[in-house]
Length: 239
Image 1 (cartoon, helix red, strand yellow):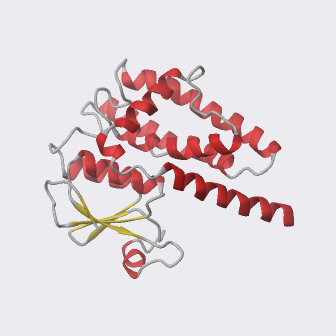
Image 2 (spheres, one colour):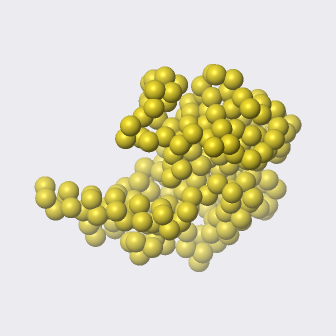
């Protein structure tokens, strides 16, 4: 399957992914923002391809971007690779100013190192007690990101300012899954009353063309999440 777009590297890029993966979503958004064509290869993670195992022998995970036969692994590494290799073909993902660039890297790492573990605990919670504790941790992380948005955006539309940047893509891979959790568990992680900046940002980000073209089907994600949650609940009940 070839993704639409044009630019440097056309015909040389392949992306190994899983359509429901937030990490893969990040890479697809970045490639779309740069207008790059690539071959997208959907992986069956229960029966991983030889190409995936050869391309990422350490973690054996997606995404893997293969550029001219050379694999690049891990979503944040891939985003920075795209930013460096195809510089000038679209808005930069990292700011030009060294301090602003370091700040963007810090908050992108915060999403993966602090927000995601808190959200993951909520995502996998199966009891009211687990959910209540996980929700408090997740809300604290979201509160921190609300303050970070005010700092990084400087009053503009995105963490990256006028254009989508690396922090937008990193955090923006999660709202559709957050909505699945909210709809199932009755939570509201991006409450517009509590977090007006982030709630408005999420709407703007999801409306970006490069995002909208590759966003997974919300109904299918919700179905997938509910099926997984039913399995986790059954396992907890039988233990």
